Length: 288
Image (cartoon, rainbow, N blue to C red):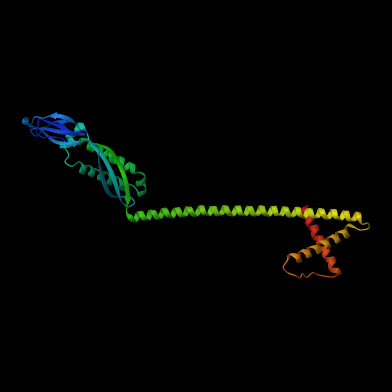
């Protein structure tokens, strides 16, 4: 600020410029520092302009190509060009209003040609178009446009709610897909594990039966060599019937029932031995 008016000297503050007139006519610009004026010769300071960067927020309401009403909040950063401060002082009475008018004009000319989604993606293009127009116009009035920021794009409340619902539905759909894939993987792994378990169980049973067969074969050979006159079939029948009764005994001891009904008689014993022998032969042939 100028510390004194109509005196022989005055001081202009930093980041400011003074407009000096003589008998009401512009004569020069006074930069920061100490200056001498001759008030008796008609010199005076007509006004002070700041050369600091100033900010102006402009809210523009317009409609997009897909008929959605939106509000755009633009921040314009501008400053007075020191060398052309006289133009800024004399040409424009209200620079903020002039800037706001041009922002309205450019935004309302560009945004109606864009869809809402395109507007969000290309907001920098809108800011660039506003910057180019303001630089071309405000430069003639002694102002420099430093930056233009498209701070926010605010659609109508109903549109925002619909967009959020669409986004939520898409995320739920994606979550369902991931959940289905996870369940599918679990079922496949479970099936593979069951198949592997059954395979190992089958291998174990086959080895068990093979071991039983080998043991029976060895018992039959030892018994035939020890007792002369006995055939392998007779020895086999004796071993099978003995194992059958051992199994019945273990069943009675391990079960909660105290009574086990079994067929009895000479013919039944023969049938039992034949059934056991046939089952063992089938198991042995299947292992082969």
